[in-house]
Length: 139
Image (cartoon, rainbow, N blue to C red; front, side):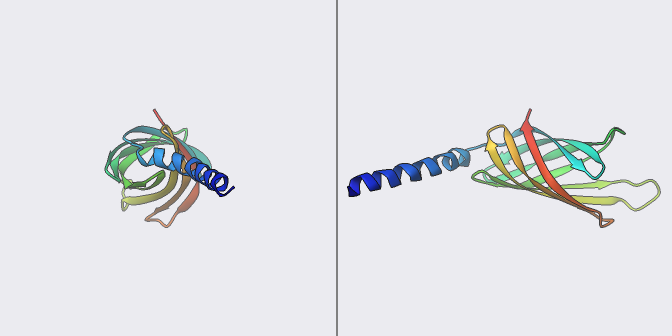
């Protein structure tokens, strides 16, 4: 009877740990696309990232709303198992004014090798703040 209980415990534990183990070998190097609501409009971001060990570095570009205005910057962060924490930093020039510096923190998880889901937290040097869910797809 004890052997049966231990077998069930071990099988349950293996089932729970196997997906985590598979994602621990994940490589997010590549190009990712994400669309998300930013205030009253939708933005689309394309990020090109390289994974080096547990670190992520790269660049990104954003198409802001239907105006076609855009900007770009750098991305850096970490991946631990399926958990991804990344920062997106950009400086935008303003016509006749001080440049606008933006930083976005994303707290996400790798759903599978081609999908990331999580939350983003944005703040800029004008103290504008936004947050919400996002999903990124490898393209």
